[in-house]
Length: 104
Image (cartoon, rainbow, N blue to C red; front, top):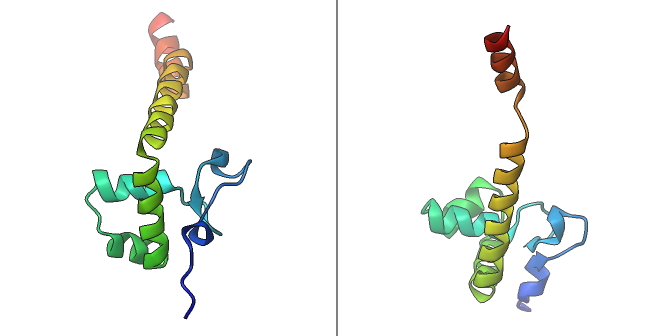
């Protein structure tokens, strides 16, 4: 049996998932796998079973994450800042309705 290299499990495609590294053939990013594993305490087996992935793909995603942790964490933080900025400048429909009711 010929071993598969990490690049057969993990791909980055401009225009798909913002070009972030992801599981080949899926829209599940390395960052998502790392979050489920690191932050939620999910084992590699649990992630593989829950998302119908091979254990090799999950381990490849985790290897990619640990090899590029600083860059991935920096991208994650930038995404949070963008999201917060958008939330602070954009009213939800509910907030707008409530404000309209209070001013009438």
